[in-house]
Length: 157
Image 1 (cartoon, rainbow, N blue to C red):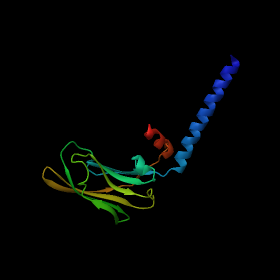
Image 2: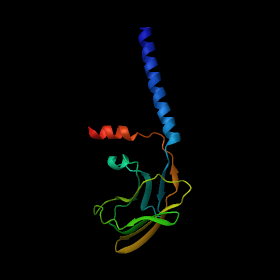
Image 3: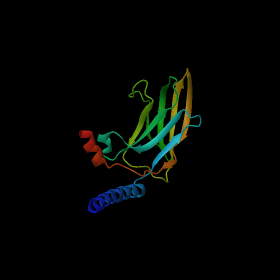
Image 4: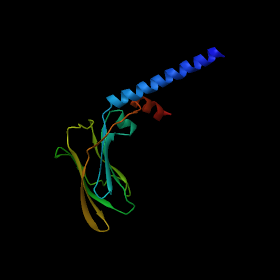
């Protein structure tokens, strides 16, 4: 009985050690994601690794904007800037008509924390055209990241 308890405790200790090692490694070696919100709370922006497995395989990052209201809206233009230079822009006409989450840029690199990122959104709500400039500068550390290899294996099943 003592021997089986010792083996169980050893196995659980090894699993815990592997888990904690993975946690600390990803917390210190993964680039942070960036978030931002409009002043009126209607929009949120996230700059993070692309979730689509084919794009994630290429280690691409994406900028997504999310509409946080239930009212109808239509996007006229979205501009993503890095240090004041336009990196991507468009009118989101290729997105589904009632999409609440919209990809506005798919980039090759993770964000550089020394750079300034902004998203300008021009949209129409209730017949009125509005514009928001959203600072995307809230750094969120990632502490448990599943490797793309495991994501690919899981997506095959």
